[in-house]
Structure formats: C-alpha cells, structure tokens
Amino acid sequence: MALTVSSFTYALAFLFAGLLALAAVNRLVYPGMRRRYEEAKMTARRRVDPNLLLSLVKLLGLVVMPVVGFYLGSMVSAGN
Image (cartoon, rainbow, N blue to C red; front, side, top):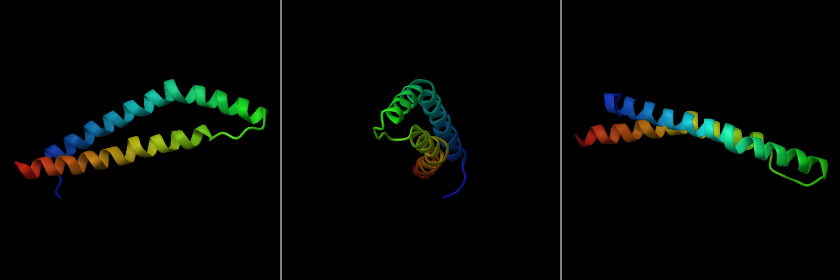
C-alpha cells in the first residue's frame, strides 16, 4: 500500500461524496428528525437522538469513505 496518484484521487473523490452525503442529511433529513424528536420529548415518548445520526454520518462521510477510497485506489493502481 503506497500513496499513488490514483489512491489519492479516489480518496478525494470519496471525501467529496461523503461531504455531499453530509450536506444532504443536514439539509433534508436532520430537520424533520429534530422536529419529531422534540415532539417526542414533550409527550415522553422515546426516540433516537438526531445528533447520534448526524455523528454517524459525519464519521462515515469524513473518515470512513476517504479511507475506503484510498484502499480502492491502491487496489486499482496495483492492477495496472
């Protein structure tokens, strides 16, 4: 496993995809989840905290996806 141009390119591409996913979750999913969570708090129902989902998406989008892209890029460059 070496740092090659293709592994770096794949890592950047996967980081960009992770940023897009994070933006989509922040814009489309999170507000509705937050609203339902606040309503559930008022009626004493249990719901999953939306911050947990956001933390998971941040971890996946900003850490895991670039690492997977780096490994995938290394495998692609090893095949050449």
